[in-house]
Length: 411
Image 1 (cartoon, rainbow, N blue to C red):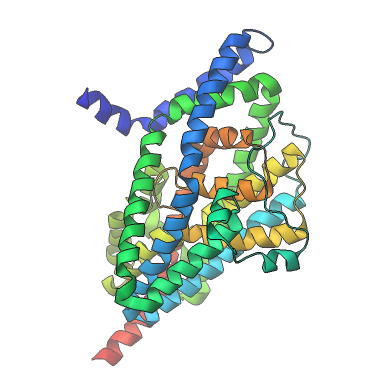
Image 2: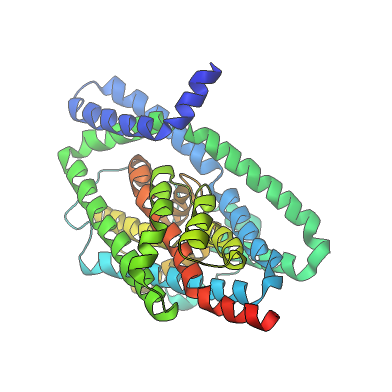
């Protein structure tokens, strides 16, 4: 039994692909018949979705606090940390902007129709930007959690995170408690993720049964466009950053980081790629260990540029496909929420699911889009993790020469 568990854990990605393919084939085969089978798959899919949604709000809340306080724990490194955070926040904001503008320009999802049930989670009401700003701070945080107001939960998490940093040692007991809750949330979601192949199968079957081959074609098109955006952003933004900010060679940079990028693509984990990332930058690109020991672990926590692109693309795609209007004001709020959520997205496989759920709840998207997204999450996650790691390493390359100057002044 233990050997099977180990084998299954190592091949979970392949099992998800199998679940996706079988779900598509089953949905096409069941079109218009075998209602009892659809009822069962709907029931199992609903249980799976509820198990995931159960921990989303506490996970996002705790992850953002842990991300903020981890930045505070290394603030004594001063210049390196400050420069790293400025770089990460700027590229994340740019990635979110790209992810919102491009799908809107090309009307991504227009002409696609998904037949889904109405969302059980109500969107945050946003009649104007002024109303949104007025309601940012929750008068009752418990109510914000109970009503599913993700924007208020995000702001409350930011307030708690910075306050814990401000009070110092006296805030450590609360931080320890939040850290424990965070680990429990991750463990629960990691356990639920073992059932993802079954969950993917059961959630994709009714969607394909209702929408037919158009669903498959539209999702495949979405993935192609998404990957073009991913690697276009990496080569243009990170390449130019290395050239003009780091005064280095983009060709040398991309050649040096190739092993780390491929490992990130295969494992879907920026955290698991940290040792390889450090080796690539220190041995192959000549970056000081003083930089890599701060930038790379910090990047695995807070730098989620590709996740920002992914979330923006998916939200706009599903909004257009489901007939949900995304106003300019809501786009601005999504941009801010995307940047905040990037801090709280775990650098592990499936970490983006929490972010997507948070943004989907803000937009009032139908609950069924979660099942569709989860069915292609691994395909999205592979490219997103790869680009995130490239972003971490581009920051190391940008800071390379500056640290050399600091080292001379130290002596």
